[in-house]
Amino acid sequence: GRFFTGFIRDLTEREESRARLHEVQSELARLSRLNELGEMASTLAHELNQPLAVIANYAQGCVRFLKDMDDAPAARLREALEETAKQSLRAGGIIRHLREFVTRGATEKTPENVRTLIEEAGALALVGSRELGVRSVFDFAPNTDDIQVDRIQIQQVLINLMRNAIEAMRESDRRDLLVRTVRDGDRYITIEVADTGPGISDELASRLFQPFVTTKAHGMGIGLSISKRIIEAHGGQIVAIRNGAGGATFRVSLPVPEKETADAG
Image (cartoon, rainbow, N blue to C red; front, side):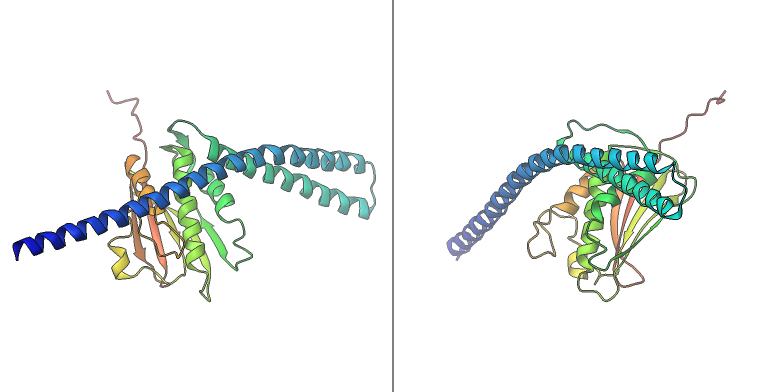
């Protein structure tokens, strides 16, 4: 009996090891594709920036040319061209940010404005969301201090949470994404990403931040485990709860740098 039990245990462990190896191989293949995609994105961003800058320059040149004309059609044209230049520059900014995202080097913590941090992440995360019928609302607490973070890493987490929320609401009748900041005492700032999707099942909730756990048919489930590591490395924490709309709310709490008191003596 003992030999048979040992044999079964050995067989089970071998099967688990094989399954795990298969997962790791799949993940390595996926990361390899991501690296290639990163290089493509970087090249594409570099190529697109130039024509976008030219579009903005031409539009601004036309605005200057029309300034001498006072009639109503010229005024409308000026407004349209000013908006064209503005949107071209905005697109260029998003693309530059995307390029920085995929080509960055070492980790570096710098003082960052929370609102700017979230708005930049939102510009990338919400691409295509309007076409999916997602209504996004950003609600920023007043007088929020800067936080000392690795900007790209934190934005990776926020983009991951926003994209997950959009994905979760694909089948929902109501598709509202709420991103808000809450001042959590003197020590923390909390960023909440809430959706109106189906929420998180009790069975999944306990394993949500473990590697290779996913609710997506084609996902590898590494996003949340990496996000957790990034937030904890910043001295913060990330939790997920079911919200009043029945969807999921992810709360990312990050520490605020302690203020130095100049008149301590």
